[in-house]
Length: 338
Length: 143
Image 1 (cartoon, one colour):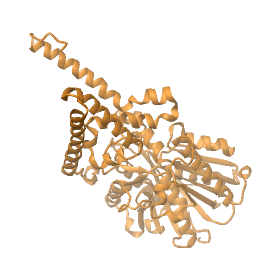
Image 2 (cartoon, each protein chain N blue to C red):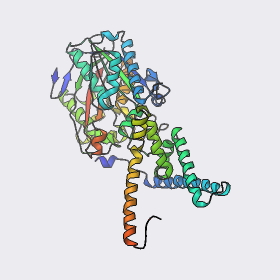
Image 3 (cartoon, chains in turn red, yellow):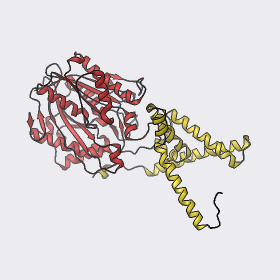
Image 4 (spheres, each protein chain N blue to C red):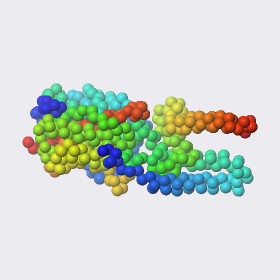
């Protein structure tokens, strides 16, 4: 049901009956390692190319989620997924393997919540019984496509972010045990004219704040409604900027805990990741791995996940275009909490 | 507003590190050259070619072992400017695009980063050559 200008309330309470995460070695050395379902020891996953490895990550996560939900592939009505590769090949190729009717989506790093929001809409509207949502990214494929070859010796500035190698998938069903998706806010594209692809956190921060503001306005709630509001991958620079913007727009963010997935997945003292993490996989594995587990344990009752995406391409920034950004918010709460 | 929150690049530290590592690489190159002169029976001019070859091979080996990019994050321009940086840019592109095949991958993408250096190097040499001819009419060229 549409609520306000750009938000949806899921009155039929679609349930995330299963969520699975598969990550690479570097994420496995981080502080959230215990929350991931599977950690791979090497970036190639025994595949012949980085791209194949990314696809394999996603296939594993999707299969694990379907297994955990106690379903078979055939019982899933629709699969909504996306990634960062040109023509979203990782998701489309995984969909070839899974053979589930598929909608490919692209929202850069906001894809994790974009796919979850669409999957929840279908289930909420009773257009599907079970849907699968996913997002994935791979450090080496993203470096190869957006930046330099992985072994190239270029010095990264302190604002640069490290793309997460990881895939997260969730099964959304009409009924079952699990956490409930209660609402979603679809973001607008916001472009404040920033052009530095090595400082995407700063470019994305205004989009995140815009979506959070819209969500609070549409639902007529205050930040204190949630036990945690978490943004996707703003990292150090974007996080501080978002805090400044909350203050400027007089959003009382202090009522709740405000965190960023890009600051949670790595250990800054031991791992050299400059400003923090990024990539579709970042918010996907932190949300599906870490946050959902904490929700289920009862550490939180209600959270708002705001995945942020920078909608640039290597060609657009070479042509001097600024970086348009977007953020999508999805609120998730414990099943027995109403 | 965004500029205010952008952490400053540690310029002085980067310069110092670049100076140290760049100097160290050049020192290594000089040592190799001296070895060629003393043990290989080359004269100074002849020794420079095999020296460059040795430095390139060293750089490629370090690139293949996945070490060169780690050195570069610490050293910055120190490891990018010498011939080793050029070798690294070619080797890393070649490794990266091996999965797209030998011709369209390795062959064509190898010059992705090194290509501009060659193009503008040639253009600059051409301009300097013209200037040299104009301002030094006695020069006959070809030396």
